[in-house]
Length: 217
Image (cartoon, rainbow, N blue to C red; front, side, top):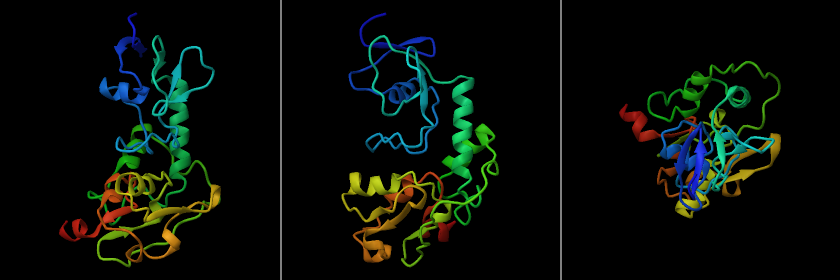
């Protein structure tokens, strides 16, 4: 094995310094699921769907936050990992009232629905109380926000801060009571939001939608 190579699913692959396992796998057209990842943003590793096994390590690691090192042997999929991913998805969709995105069907992102179908995840496996839902905000001419479909991946929060520098979207409370909101918990039209649409583009569930696109559909 030469310098700056890893073994990815049995294949020797080169990498550049600082490149993550997820980036290498994506470059090699190796599928690794994720819900919190956006290539424009600093890797977050919160959804844990992208976990992989590394030889010599006891527990799986998040591939989006783990930088490759020479000689690393990585397995992106096996029975244990796939079972783990399915269970995580079932926990995520237990928070959603539905998997079909309405009224954003065929317009908004279907990332979550696609993964649920791929892993045949059961949205009724985990029953009980749900975590806090953010307030529905339809009081602006551009963006539809239906947080019953939100999974708290924070992609909208992060893209607003990291890409636009607006900080119009924020997080209120923690843990089971987490809610996505705006600055000072007001309406979006009264915030620093410029209605650039970046949050809509990054949302993986359809919780955010473009009203103009919906009207023209």
